[in-house]
Length: 190
Length: 244
Image (cartoon, rainbow over all chains, first blue to last red; front, side, top):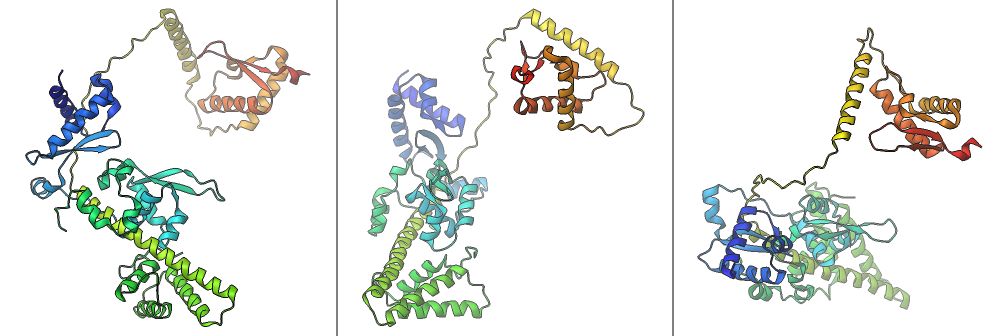
């Protein structure tokens, strides 16, 4: 099979599966090397960026999944009567930001940083699968450590943790600039 | 401990302080403690007048502010001035860090709002016939099992004598252990088989309790269970050293 055909097959697999498919599975089923599959994925990703296409390839670590484009949401909602799930509360959002940049982290550190108790926020994030246990800290009381999950990456649209802007971007107040350069601008106004 | 109730949209005392600092257009590294403390306390008074319960974290922060302020008013010797600076420096560090995480949180929030607009398909479950490994069976073993089953059925039939009265059966592991120990002493070195411990009218409960008793005895009172193959009767023996 040539590269075009391979691209088509993979698109079909991703559509058929619905859920995220691992790079390993694709390599095994198609008898291709990770390098070849990654190459095809990049082509597919770029193809989807064309405004004539209505899907996009979402990569989280080494898994791939198709979704609709966020910028088409208003139209899709009209047809599907889709009920958008609600975002996180500010408390949960702050807690998530701390876990994302300080992981693995204990509840005590989060409480300290926020200046308020964060146990209910942590519970909500656990319930939504955005953070998970990352073992225990070898310190008195052996407190639980928390880390972010692949679901967190999906929820904020990052492929991996390395893709997040550096902490210094925020501590130096340069996030505005990063927003414009690094990431597509948010075309949906609330 | 107070719940993380947000009072008028403030996530906590740090959030309120940052709001006051921004409102007064103050440099975060050069906070006029006495003015900020005044505003902070009056905000808490407002909430109290509205009969709102102020989370304990807000009160703790008020105490911290007042401590910093009062130390500034006291005549300074060296040790004390160090202390005062520590308190203030710690508060500033906390505020700076919290402010950064507020920014990150807003940034992630924007991204989250955008990603909430992406729709994913639910996985499609297509029943696919998997190639199963062929099962290798020994016909003789199968026949043996079947014979055993037939035999069991007969015994079962004997056992099912319609009960005239329904008696609540009570077995407990301790009593069973005593019973089995006695039986083992009686039969000496030869040991017992599991089936010998079961009488024809035995109930399922009693079989379960017998097995539990045996497992307990393996752990505590030095017996050994031996079975040549799976799914057949097994021998119960006392450990040799026990026999003295």
